[in-house]
Structure formats: C-alpha cells, structure tokens
Amino acid sequence: MTRNVDDRVIPGTLNVGHTLPTTAQALIYTTLIQVDVTTLFSMIAASILGSWLGAGVVARWPKRNVQIGMGVALFVAATIFFMQQLQLFPSGGTDIGVSGIRLVVAVVVNFALGALMTLGIGLYAPCMILVSLLGMNPTVAFPIMMGSCAFLMPVGSLRFIREKSYSPRAALGLAIGGVPAVLLAAYIVKTLDLYYVRWLVIVVVIYTSISMLWSAYRSVSAGSILEPRRAGM
Image (cartoon, rainbow, N blue to C red; front, side, top):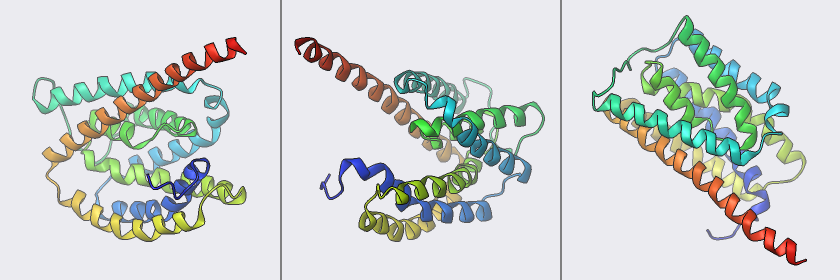
C-alpha cells in the first residue's frame, strides 16, 4: 500500500521474509499440537515431493484454469463442512491422525497441493479443509501446513536471494516482526475451542475460494481488454 517495495520483488520479499517465521511456526505447532507422527511426516513428505517432482508438469498448466478448478472445489468443500457444522451432514473431527485409505487420500492430495504451490496456489486453506473432511481435528492442519512450508520456503528463498529478486530491508522487517507474531498465534490457536476453529476454517476457505475465482475473472477481463488493442495495432 505504501509502495515501499517494487511489485516485481514482492513474491521474493514475502518468501524470504516469511521463511524464518514459518520455520518457527513449524517447530512450535509440532510441539504444542498433538498429531500422529506417521500422518504428519507422510503429508509433509508428499507436499515436498509434489513441489519438486510436480513443478515441471504443473508449471505448464494454465494458471487461470487451475484457479477456477481450485476455487470451485474449495467452495464445495467449505459448503460440505458448513453443513457438518450445522449437523445437516455426518461429521467426524477429533482424530489426530489417519490410516489406511484415508492416509492414502491425505498423501495423494497433499502431493497435488505441493505441486500447485509452484503456480502460487496456497497450501494452507486446501490443507485445512482436507484435514477436516478426513475427520481429523482441524488444529492438526497447523503443524502439517507449517511443516510443509518450512521445508519448501527455504529452497525458494535461496533462488530469490541468488537472483537479487527481493527487498532485504522489507524481508528483514517481516522476519523480525513475524517470529513474535507466530508465538502469539500459536497460543491463540492452541486455546481456541474446536467449534470456533471449524468456523475459522470455513471462513478462510470461502475467502480463498472467492479470491481464486476473482483472480481468474480479472485475468479474463484483462485479456479481453488487451485483445482489441492488439487488433488495433
């Protein structure tokens, strides 16, 4: 908003600046929140492999189509979760881990989410709804999300630093302010009633869904505006 950072280096600045707070979050949440070790490490490993192996494939997909698909899928998932909250639909929601076919589903979907991160599709909201729909306690998503990103972000940060595609001053500010903030956030999340955590998940996922669909719509609108200009040339 204050235009202190060039738009071109915003992605790199955010990635570099948030690496230390995200790593701190991963350590804090895995300590504070009880989660099944097999589930945790399987899903983290899946997202890392997805980001690494799937990057070349996903990078060739039209970003707008992925945004539309993810936006619709998240909205449907949030609707199902909303119905569960109102007890109009069967729900689980207290497990700290999964096994069998549910673990397979968790690993496969988190692999896909890790790959989609290369397109700028965030992992947090989809992972929250995945964990919830698989019948786990929604707070279990926090160590899984942060653990995934704690491994993924340093790799991306090194690339941005090497290419000098970031603002050192802004990144330092994010890192210094971010670590105390995650300590406070961890305490809030740990003490929140599960009922309110579920509503928080619904709000975050619906917001993310609308944001993705709006971004896809804007890209179409921008394309339709540019076409007549090209024709005039």
